[in-house]
Image 1 (cartoon, rainbow, N blue to C red):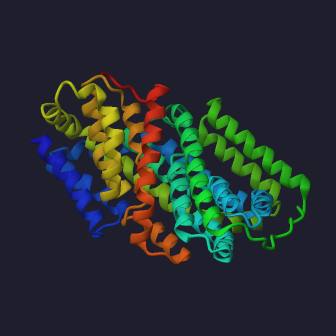
Image 2 (cartoon, rainbow, N blue to C red; image 1 turned 180 degrees about the horizontal axis):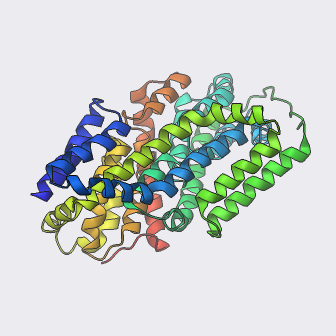
Length: 423
């Protein structure tokens, strides 16, 4: 009975958010309460929800303060000198332009916001592409691949969903996949090189005017921001301090450095609060969903049912299977439905075969490069609209490269031990 209720809860949740009958925030909050009452757990629901909120609180804090921090850094122009230098380096060479696009995209995507990355990069690079007559599908493909890699960072939506759904520590989930992320960055740079060589042969090299370097108004503040950001990244990778607290402290220091006035600080926080609050609140709502799903033992019951379906020979390789299936799953259903509906069930099932939840979490993130091509991702429509290309053409042009990027990450994750494989 609990297995059927759990499956019904997940199916109802997925259906309602996929058909846009309810927002993820509302569905994550109300659907589990309804099914918890049906399961007869009325008196214990508040404790289950409280436990879920406690488990997801560090992730919610990390996400909110991470978004605010990088929003402030982009606004104060931390990355502008680098953007200008890359444009100057590219000049009229299609190869350099495309390679520069790739580097810029990886940098700007640090904030984990695909829409913001698209706005910045397309705004900066599309005029150059038009001037040199470079295929704009190359611009949209490179952007999609880069964002698909960088949205695995700990303060991004996909990572936050994974952390909150599986109750994992950010450093445990993220640090072991750093080598695979670096490998995928090298791979995407190689893809950009392939595109660039083809366009250089087709178009040749044209000399164009490039923007002059903007003088840094306050070098002391600029380099302080740079050192602060480097320190945060080092703290993130080293795991010396809790990541959420690191970003809280970093944001406080950044506000004091860049906006001494309290009125300015309030305005800047308000300007970036929308995206931070919307994603952060969703993570807290996910605590209710996972708290009830686990507390009522629905998750355990479903896992026991699924164990009988999976052949014993495949069970120990559940992480590898998850890495592969994350591509079609996250393409056809939203990240909310996947991470809060399917990933927890997969993790509990895998545990019966000796596969830890942390490996399922890492594997579930791999398909994000393909996910960014999904018709369910609103920012993708923004990208193709800004670049003036059709959605279908963008998908056909980019899909094989997105699949290849995921497979590169999976292979390196296996080779580095982030994901286990058994023969």
